[in-house]
Length: 99
Image (cartoon, rainbow, N blue to C red; front, side):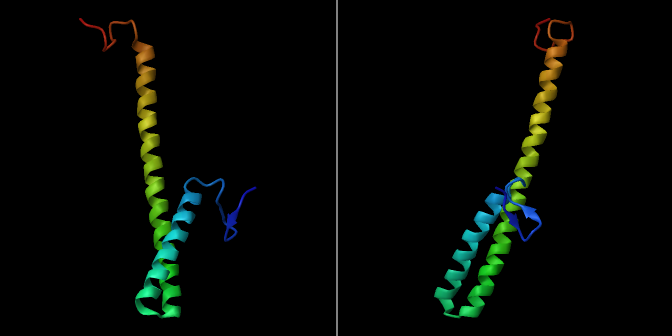
């Protein structure tokens, strides 16, 4: 069963969304509780917790999406290399043959 965050983001289907929300909730608890323990200001601690959630979620989201994009580029390069190896294997253009 899918879970929609704010009615727009399907957490189950969107890559990196689940991990980003989980990291954000952890960052929220740590930031808010840490600020509360340091200052004993409840309302400001809530605000710091919300800011911690947003920053941690966005940071985790962009980091994960960047790594996924980098992985896709590497996979395409490897697939192209394997395709060329299959095409040129056994011919005079084969780079693995000794001349």
